[in-house]
Image 1 (cartoon, rainbow, N blue to C red):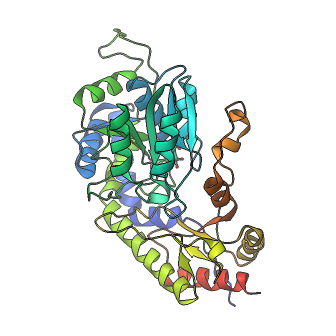
Image 2: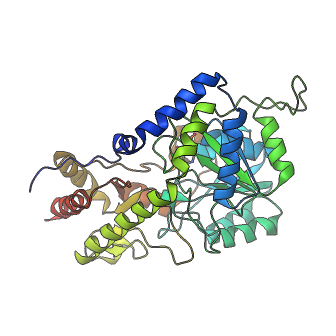
Image 3: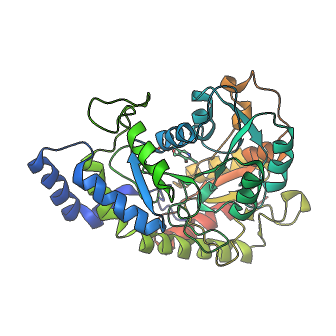
Length: 388
Ligand SMILES: Cc1ncc(COP(=O)(O)O)c(C=O)c1O
């Protein structure tokens, strides 16, 4: 087989398509010498609210801060319990713990890798001080918002959505992720579908009062200069980031569509080799690859990551083979958060689906600039790496 380098993500290829536009926008910010918040950030907030079909958008310094600000503004505090998945990036539960509250880890649905609503219901019934539920739209795929919003309203608590990986996705109602939840948190970390030139984050909400509180909390709880109604934090978005993100936002739908086309290409090629979607467990046997289960329309994934599943005992060998072939790959995430040392003091959680996914998932290259021949090379290399 020939050697063709395929990185997991190719940001230089994206930059090459936007170089002149981005440089002009950055130059404009330097000419103005106004670097924090200001009109570029306000304009980006308006554009993100429109894109997400939400009333308001409040920008901040990172996706992690978006979660922290949202949970704080919704009243989560010491000794409260917050349901969240364990199979996610650290920030989801880190934000809960930073507020003195306790993450109550809930298992995932193995087909979608998102919170299992039945497991969330059972966990909610065991809580004594349930204060919020955090859902993560993992890999770009929408969680079951209908079931989770119903559960949250039954318990009178808010649903906070961690949409760091899901900008542009739609849930089962057909609404854009960001247009429905009480507080929906986005990240503009450079590797995200809408990536800045550094850190950045944003919260969308339809609740005007919550938006005002978030805008105050991001500047030390200060609605007016030198008036501090409460203790907040410094979590402002830079004008430079807003300028870059405004340009990229115009391309986001086309980029997500290009990602979707590659997902269909991967699915077709793996399915032709005998792979089945993640709704069929690996233990059912057959060809040892599971592809991401597609969403049922009108739900749509943002196709952030293309994550296959392979038997745990074959994953390291496959990774070594892909590395030798020059193919980028990674594991999101190799451990559940309930297995992290910093959460060792929490009551033990039984999360078999989370632990199995952590042993079996493998993300393959996916980005709009990926070429078809590169994708075909990835598939051929995976099949070769799994051949007995
Ligand atoms: C699921 C999830 N939540 C939260 C975050 C945190 O975002 P940030 O890196 O912008 O703080 C990320 C991104 O890294 C993420 O993937």
